[in-house]
Image (cartoon, rainbow, N blue to C red; front, top):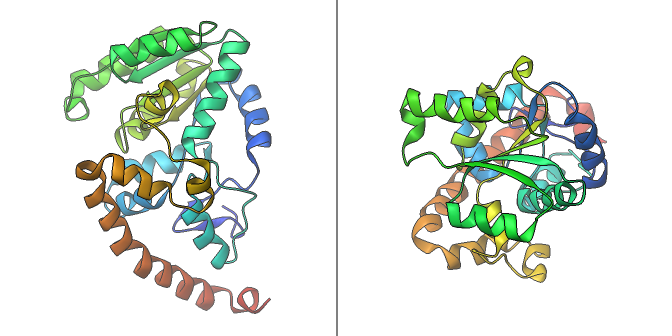
Length: 253
């Protein structure tokens, strides 16, 4: 774990999206591995969710999803090339899969969204399974998801079931069971199909995508964003204080 890229207990991927996509193109040919995309909400959940922490530890790359988190990391002296929002990464993966006629396993998302995805990206061979609500607390339902992933070989596995469910499923698939790469993608399929509209580009550039999303889904997201805001300030100060005590020479440079 590199101190140059480590904060909040996470060793972040430091490269840009172009390099990451090149690595993924090679990674899908190798024994199964998976990617997680930390943001402020994930930091909150990592505080108390042991399964999520285990998934983060096992992940091949931990890619900063948030421009807000990127700014905080920069203030801690950690300089990543860029934030790579999961929705942008998912769109790039879908375009690549469509162009190269790849196979994708999709866990989660409504059947209607899977149908839209097939219409938008006809070059993709899509294998879709949508588990019932509350599946993560039912071992037999979790096993159905994992069995579906094992029984459908593909270059990509997209877990569209939210955090921490997607990360837990991604970590439960073993490298010896298949090849390919897994990604916990949250609501990215809804963005890709146009079911949910993303923030305008200017809002994303000014780190205001969270505000756009909260206005679109106030009941679901207002409470979550408030919890994130309450958590991140003291967490940032603790991290900064810890780094100053642990490496004063670096802090001065």
